[in-house]
Length: 524
Image (cartoon, rainbow, N blue to C red; front, side, top):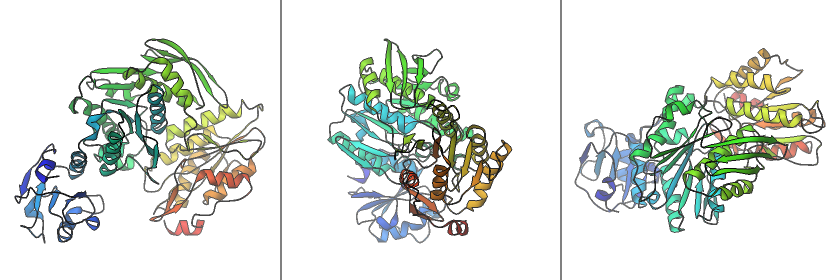
């Protein structure tokens, strides 16, 4: 595509040096990947400034560069051999350019964005199932996988919303597959870093917005604002003929107060028990299912889902509200919800013939941990033994939100009967210090080291110990990793799967793909 056509898609161009309107073969943000004829995006990152590599990119064949710095601030750049386009935000430009390169695929389908702190992946899967059950050609992109036609694509190890080239390539493949509706999981990182710039959303939905990612956003207000940009973008996005812009809001969550005033063509509100367009009543929980009456604008309809826990009622309501926003019939909503199996790593049960329940859950935020342990406690007391206990294994990630570490320790201390604190991506922080912060909070909640509280650095050993402690009717739940397939010690990602670790533990073995506890401590 011609450079002039590509740059015409940019919201703002501050200046341009060099005439160049030549053909662009590719768009890259890593100078090491530049091929002759490419456009290089110079991104000012946290640790590395891409402007330092403009000269290298040009020497490798880049014919155009998009960056944020004024030309006079760039040293050792071979001016006259390429076109330099200055923009206010190179990350945002990257999104728009990738969208333009692919022909703005989101403009050829109805695009639904799901954001929130917890429940995004589950809600995306529910919406996808509802759309498919309604007979619509649907695709989806979540942090677990992308589904395009009959194909499922793994989206990575530690993933958030994919980078712009991947997002736009997935959407373009959906257009080729004649997809009419796409559901996209949109994280706060993805919004703040403009990974979905160039995506024209028609429905924006929120699950909840609670304490998380303050290491990245700085404050809860900044985190909330990042989420709000998905809804603010509705009014600015490309208007597709006959497709209104709809906001789906959770009246039960504090986010409702600041998302509700954001303009949209229509709002659909859901609530577990309050006044709303979509709500639930007569909720009944069992260890294997959740049943309730789904109240829709068209009337009431019974729903049963294999997803357990009160928080999944809210997730189902969010998905049902998206269905209402898109005009899906109540029967398709009901049947679609019923088809969704357990989401990988979300309250996923691991069975090996044991007489207690073993569960792997992704809960890595205070709210998610509270919800997971509340559900586990309910299950423990409905499995036929009144003295059923909850044994939790969890950790907190290094180089991430430090404020949540004592909060999660307190929650575990209050809601679980036995607490084992272990590693969860310590990265370059000291693992023992991370664990001790949560352990102190758990002890302040009444837990006693060596009695009902332990610190076990080796995650495989921690899961094994939990299973060895369990007796009939207990619930062993390991939280924080869920579906993820690696764990970071130092700067290295090691293979890791909580589900496989749980399976090994149920057979009296440990999964030993991680560094030793000593190695982990030395990496801190």
